[in-house]
Image 1 (cartoon, one colour):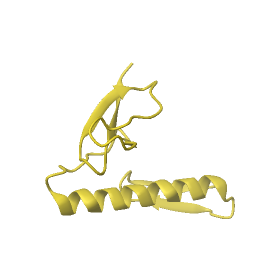
Image 2 (cartoon, rainbow, N blue to C red):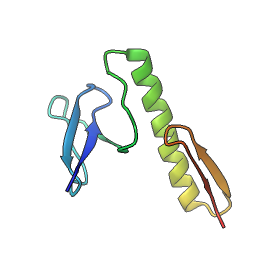
Image 3 (cartoon, rainbow, N blue to C red):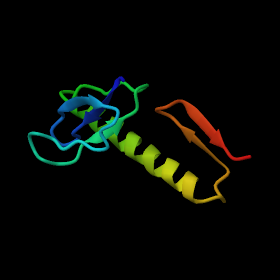
Image 4 (cartoon, rainbow, N blue to C red):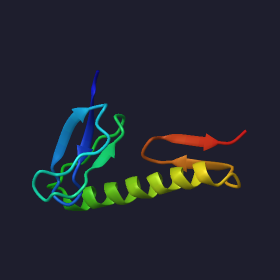
Length: 89
């Protein structure tokens, strides 16, 4: 079984854990980490502007996916980071 990547947005620390793990807590700040889709490249936390922009877009797209799944009135969405366009039948 392959691993998943988790990242602490606050600390910039990333972790690789088994796919069976549902959540990861940062060992430095004890905050919950964000799961990162395997297709995505996470910018270096040293590049503060890129790091902040990436997480802003990533979180916005996660909220958009959740809204799409929960609201049947939304017919289509476009995800920049994942390079996907989702539509309803």
